[in-house]
Length: 461
Ligand code: ARG
Image (cartoon, rainbow, N blue to C red; front, side):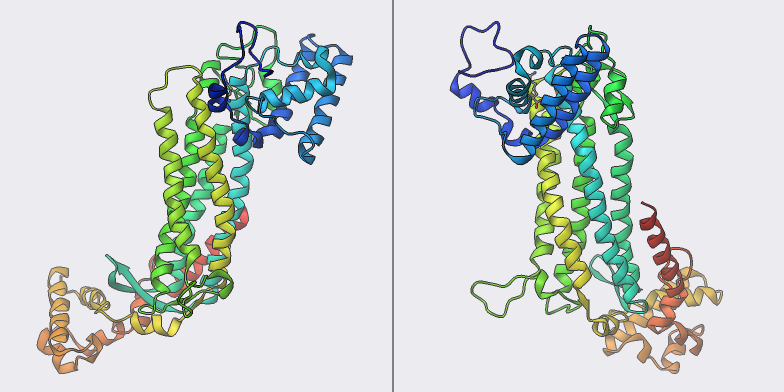
């Protein structure tokens, strides 16, 4: 015989098929400690409202504490007959505190306000854990940038050689989005820090319970303003899912580069053995599986978000059972990110760069052509003309199969009277890098400042 929380008006128990469909303990059991914390806070407001005597409160809190210990140790587990985490824990409380006292806890609350609160509690904790793991990745990138202050690489647009940049500048370009992801979790927490507890099923409680007291005890800034909104909304959960998906995408974009850099053709990076995998058939293989898994898991993180958004679309107020589907997507995101991020940080901190090869390729593909044009502009030549002249230099070089710096003084003057030998100062990678010295640019002194700024920001979290 199933012991449900709602049997009174039913002639018989639920069918096996319904029970199997309805069951959620296989995923919501991870909210057990939050559920017990909520129950303790709820017991206290019942007591304040004179609905529990001093003795009853003591028995109740003691029962909940012992239940928490047994949940923690694995001594208490949900049974197949328990519909959800709430049902299982009520059974556990009644076993410990007796039906007389244990049966009083449920007054004035509903699983609808409970679950909405517990999910927020859980995600607020996990957002902090994930944020710290993201900072580990940022730290690894910053350390790599710091270890390679002068290394140049071909900067790309459209995956084509564009302009030389510092490797440190490129690595830091992956740090800022990650720091914004951490900021997003922090900003999100402001909205998540409101407790739906006390909203009841949808309309609030008639028993004189104080939602603000429960909110404070559970670490929220305040109670929700509206009980219908408190039980029906899931935008806070969806926003968490977006931030997590965006984080996955940011890791994936860097992963794609690592995968390319790690090819024979590029040869820019070597991954440490401890963070690479082999092939079961090809003995020579060393594969960038962490980067590939990060790229692959970005798809899954996006799927978690879109699945949740699709669930929410079209739901009328207030609670609908569809909302039970909000948990698995974000639980999956939490599980995915907490296993992915440490591996990713390890891969980044142990990878080695072939800076010689990167430097050699940095000026190739006529990536200094813009420097010629901008040098001409500094000599007073209109950019329209300067662009033409630099383009003509590229054409001559392409026809002759040489690089820009191979042009002789005579070649340069033949292309344009403005191309005096002074142009050679920007026909080197160092000259090009050094000239991009405005805030945010790739000049070494600007990148050094940027690095300090990133370190300060990381230290401030
Ligand atoms: N398990 C449900 C959920 O995750 C909470 C229970 C609400 N059930 C109900 N029949 N009102 O959303």
